[in-house]
Length: 186
Image (cartoon, rainbow, N blue to C red; front, side):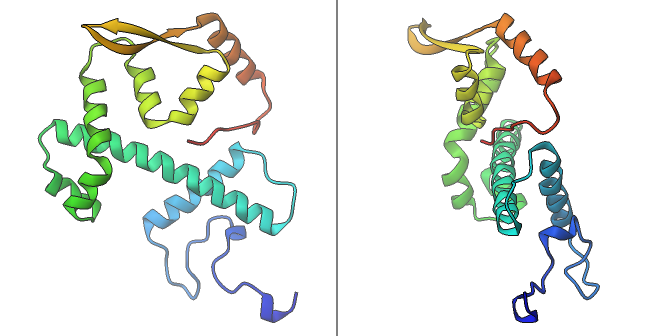
């Protein structure tokens, strides 16, 4: 392509550049994010097409990271709230308005606090179901978990039956699988 169509900004194909160009250093958070996107490239097979396909694939990896960040933020907010942090303090730490943070996260934070406060042995599965629903439903789909309706304390809930043998087989297959098979993103 001619000079007119040459990309002159920092490129995804520069691996993890240290600068925006002209010696202007990237912020540490930006560098960490670019390193995470590139690390996911090692874990998931690269697309077969050209540059555009690889850039679209990088966008998909970034979306997976955003979802993981949102889940991690929910956990941190729940723990901070449980330990007495106010929504105002948490919003200040996140750099947003209290109302915005509360509107977006209050229900999930309340559910996560309830899950984590429970002494139920299904706590990890309930957290996965709340924070990573696609992963949870994938586990159900492949038969590693079987959700069953039940009654506890007069309330209807789901009980999770783990298929221990199927989990052991799946773990063995995963360890034998070549690097970079398939990764689901929530």
